[in-house]
Structure formats: C-alpha cells, structure tokens
Image (cartoon, rainbow over all chains, first blue to last red; front, side, top):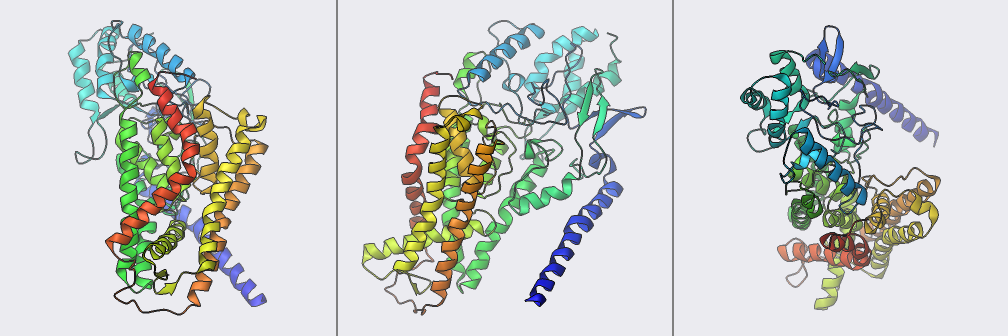
Length: 196
Length: 375
C-alpha cells in the first residue's frame, strides 16, 4: 500500500516537473533563440516604444487609415486584454440593429451610394474582436477615401493594397486578405504621416 | 512559434497605437499550452476566445496543424484497437463508420454556413456567408471545418463563435455532441462511446437475423445490454433534464445573450457541451453563476462517469466470457455492412432522442429566420 503510494507520488512529482517546468521553459528557450520577435507578440516599434502588433487589430478611426473590422472585445472594442466576439445569433435584433448602423456609417465614411452593397466583413464583428485582417474587396472600397485624405492618387493606394495582400498557403489553404495594421504602417512609411 | 504564437513570461504589453490610443495586449506562455490543448482534445484556451485569438492561432497553417492534432490520437487509437482485437479490419470498420458520419456532419455544417444570413443581405450587405463571429483568415471553410472537428472530438477549442453560427449549423454541432462525441471523439472517450453503439448494433442485427448476438466472438447478453442502455440514457437525461430546469427558472434565464429559440439553444448547448465534456459553448450564455456552475458540473459528472462505469462493467464481464470462433454463419463486425449499420444506429438513436429538443431550438430558429423574424 505505502509502496504504491510512494510510487504514485514519485511519478506525479516527476511528471509535474517535466510538464510543468521543463517543457514550457525549454519551449521558451527555443522561442527566444529562434523566433524572438514572434514569441513576443510580433510587435512593431517606433524607436524603443511598441506601437502595434502585426497580429492584433487596432482601432483606426481617422480617414487616412484603413479601418479594421468592428470589434466586440472589451467595452470600446479592440481590447487586447479581453478578446471576445458578440455571440449574437442569426435572428438577434441586437445584431440586426448593429449591422444596420454600421452599414450606414460605412457608406457615409466612404461616400458610397445608398444602394451600394457593403462587404460582409466590414460590418460584422470578428470572433476574437482582434482580427487584424480585412478582405481585399473591403480594402479596395476604402482606398478612395484614404487617397483623398492623404492627397495621393487612388491608383497608388490600390498598388499599396496589392503589395500587402496575403495569399492562401500553397494556393489552397486559407483566404486572400489584407492585414490592416501592416498596411497602415506601410502607408505612413511610404506617404508620410498626416498631421491631424 | 515561428508563425507568431506567443511564448513569453513578460507582463502585459501596454502600447500606444498608431493613432495614439492606449492598447493593452495580454501575454503569456501560449505556445507550449497550445499543442497540449489540441493533442489532448482538452480545448481550454489561453485567451477568452480560444483559437480565434491571433496570438493563439495566427494563420491558416497553424489552424490546419491544430485541426490535425485534434484528430490525431483518436484516429490512431482505432488502429491500435484493430491490432489488439487481432484483426485490423475491426478497427477499420469503426473508422469507416466514424468517417462516414463526419463527412455527413461536415457537409451539413458547411452547407448551412455557406447559405449566409439573408436578413443581413437585406440591410445592404453583400450576399455571402455571415462573418459575424468569424475571423477573415478562417472565413467560411476553416471555421466550419474547425467547428465540426472540435465538436466531433471532445475538444471544444473554437476558432469562430459557435453562438453566431447559422441555426442549422449550430444544431449539427449540438447533435454531434449529443450522440456522445463518437465521431472520432476525445482521446479514448470517443472510442468507448462508439463501443456502446457497436454493441447495440450487433444486438439489433442479432435480433433481426435471429442469431445470438456476438461481438468479437463474445456473446452479448442481457447484462451488457442493460449497461449499454444506462450509458446511453444517463447523459441524455442529464442534457435534457437540466436544460428543461434551466429554461424554466429565473436563474437559468438570467444568463442569456440571445432571445427566442436561439436563447433556448444557448442553454441546450451548454448542458450538451458539459455532459459530453466538450467545453465549447454558445459563449453568449453567462455560465459563471452559482446556478450554472452547479448544474453544469453535475451534468458533466453524469455525462462522464455515467458512461465510464457501465463501460468498465461491460469490459469486465466480456473479458470473462468464452470466445467463440467465427463461423461462416455468424454476423461479422469487420465489413462494410457493419460500418453502415453502425453509422445509422448512431444517427437514428441520436435523432430519436434529441430531435424534439432540436426542433424547438435550431429548426424553429431556422424557420423563423427564413420568415424574417427577429428577437
């Protein structure tokens, strides 16, 4: 009896040491040495201060930037510490009202006619609330507004979008999409920041 | 890690965004947790939104690896079983039944999701699958696949919000958990769940052709069938009973995020997921209240041990029995006929038990959606 107890205590503490400490620490060491920027959250720095993570959406509201998808993360959205979707079902009145409002806002922002169809991803919240991507169609519609706000040609914007399109892996796995955060960083780099 | 899953012990990162707003990013040793969560079909995510979070599942490739890891061990176990049983085809027959069911549920989920939400289209949104609760990088295909896999196995990790799935897709996901997650299932758990149906299938075949039912050369008798029925009924009773209680008391209704049939669906999904030990959720339901904590825990307990104990009893009684050699007249369990029969047993039993409940949630919501009713 005591022998069995002794055995199970040894196995338990041994496994706890391996799985609880040795394994995460060795993963940590591998990550730090081989993939340092990625394991720290793919952060982008301006000087020494982090300004963005290329994997996390930020709230862009100004006209000279591409806008990400709406967010239900945290009270004001885009809260990196409280990821969340809206969890509203198909027949939800709340969802219906929110989308209606967003469709109107999107049309007026981008100077669209009242009948033009709006991309699905532009008016629905993502699963995490931190989805950094938008569809190419969504970006293309926004290009005109950004070009006007920055005083450059729309074709330049379209070019910038196409340079930033991420293709599916090996042509099959995944979707064609644009990362809003990196795209906006590219804009600031190529065309300069717009003074507000 | 090379794709951007974080693995760090540093504190939360505070950053000032490009537009000058403060943003806090949660950090932690995610990468080492991630593979455990998937391989062990555990499914508890590091972040609130689980594998929808860009730090947990940054792109389609990591997504693919995660889906692969969920199924890896459950499928490997089937082949291990074939080896133990001394006939590889026994394992393959069960694999076949599971694969057949999985193909059915995956196509149903994908189709239901691809139809989109007609009511959003009327508001001037482009027609197409609804993106509410989905990430652009996963969109329709990867989200449906992940959802089907995670509820087929008892994983429960999610990469899109199941609560915002179309009514019918949500119903399919629930049905998969209701039949006991026998479509590949959790590590070990899916297999013993499928054994229930395998024994029951053999029993029914035996009755139909008028032979003593046998599985692997062992007679199936009253004792085994009783245990099988207990294992089938207890989780079902837990799911339906507790859902009924929750839907009829104020404590249960307080946590709802959606009204109408979808609200009832949230409750049903919660107990199904708990009893089947899945762990995914129609996450709109606020389940962190004393009422839900206690009832979900009981449902989980019944759903788990109500199956494990009868199965151990069966295993013990079967192993003490005399093994008969297969003759040309005996019903075989390693061929196509058995595979198909097994798949239908799962479908029919699952459907019979849960169709009424699903009618009031998924199917009612679907019909009301088509008629344009909002809640």
